[in-house]
Image 1 (cartoon, rainbow, N blue to C red):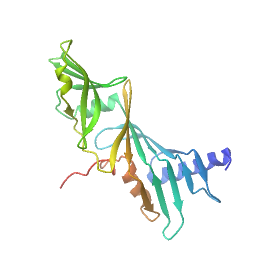
Image 2: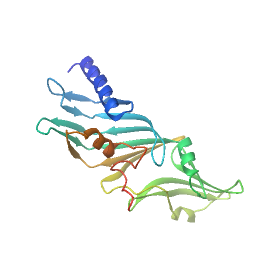
Image 3: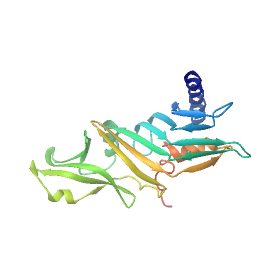
Image 4: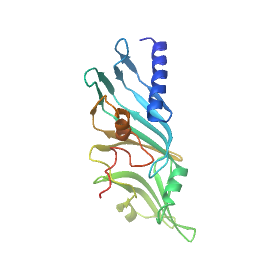
Amino acid sequence: MTATDGANTESLIDQLVSSWLERPVRVHWARASGLPLPDRFEAPSITFGGLATAWLDLDTVVWRASRVAFTPGLPATLAVTDPVLEVTVAQAAVDRWLGRFDLPFRLELGADALIVHTEVAALPLARLDARIGIVNGWFVLQPQRASFLGMPNYLATLFRTYLPLPPLADSARLADIQHAPGRLTLAFALRDFTEAVTPGLFLRLQRRLTPTVEGPFGGLFKPPRD
């Protein structure tokens, strides 16, 4: 497949997937093979922009995999290897989200950590430089450095704070964290899966891989108990 053919195919798939998912997306892959239409894709990715969810509004969502393979048959199947869901949030979305809870701290997305500010009557009381971790599936803030009234506070680094987010599903794990001023990107590794190419395929893929407004992150978080 030539570079021009690949670009044309990507453009066509962009349009098809955008139509099926009812939102604009950008599709890319490193290499494709198969004739007359490609049926093996190496390092594919699908990028979504500006998604609202039941918890945090996301700047971008990127789904990646090491390989996607289409196998003809009755029914045909779509096999996905090493899927990863990468989500990026911005400071404004974090501020709106924290405003929904009565929490005793303010969270700043710093260049190399999450900065937790504690204030009393608008006066700064304590500061924690923390990183996100997972404990028994739950998201926690794990302090790295701390100060109280401007003085180092080494005992505070022994404590951790749980975030008001649902726990990760057993099929997902936190694979990577990237910090930047005003932005935070989390990458979640999911299990390999195979889906039959039957009616409802793209709805099932959306539930597995992309956040939605109405519910949680598909297979990323554990569903709430009845």
